[in-house]
Image 1 (tube, helix red, strand yellow):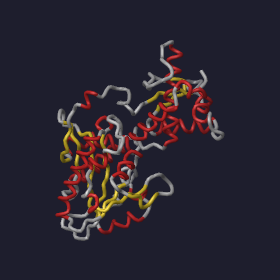
Image 2 (spheres, rainbow, N blue to C red):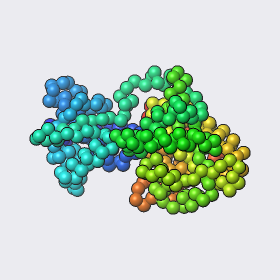
Image 3 (tube, one colour):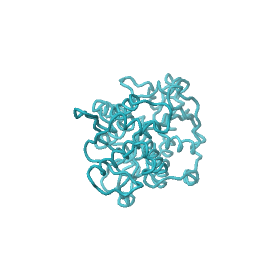
Image 4 (cartoon, helix red, strand yellow):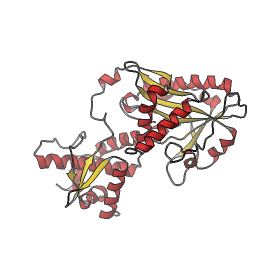
Length: 347
């Protein structure tokens, strides 16, 4: 089996589908997503060939291979760089190291060659979602006693801390600290059948001394993804007439529940909360966010957010909208023009 021939038995349009969904659920660069998807497909076919199992080609969906499968740096090089002039076997090995460090694969050395186990984060891609689609959800207040761990688990993966228990604990601590502040609305999208949170957002009122953060590189304002106990964005307290900014932090809906109806429901909830916040912060007029995934940037753009400062060292940008304009939006009318997959992911 020639790894360089992967496009013949796993067509490019199918690869793009998985790359898009993968980037929608994880904070991956396109290049890393491409390499992971090609590696995943290759190991699946290789395992089936070696075990004598039947696998219909070309592939239309990816199943998760079982256990560890051998994969040399030469094979990885053919997968990752066969269509490119650049790239070496050493570079392919470094790419596999990066995929392992963010929790998409596990590596071990069996004495002769490197063996890889795929850890697919796309648990819903190949599963029927009809049952989930029928589950009703509703917007509700974040309840730290029951919501902290589920929400922190998602955010840990969202910020590429797939195997970092310390990071998960830190995020949980941040969420509980925020929930103690009455001036910070924290909301969830909750399943009606079991009360489990499947969506989350924070509308964070910003103290005057932190406004300068929105005029410098956005990477200096990241909090979940950096190892610091000092939040660069200070919170305003109710009644603060100097507060002019709201920062949307952590807006997401889990992929299985990401559809037109639920997005509109969650956005309408946010609009109601924003109107209520104006009573505590009468001068608020600006709203900022940093979309970390392409699908959420697409959503923000559709809603009228504009990029105002791009980080030259990464793909993230501040996005801004005037609150007065945001409150006039008709979400259903705007989002009806977007092609929203009924079972895909976004932030």
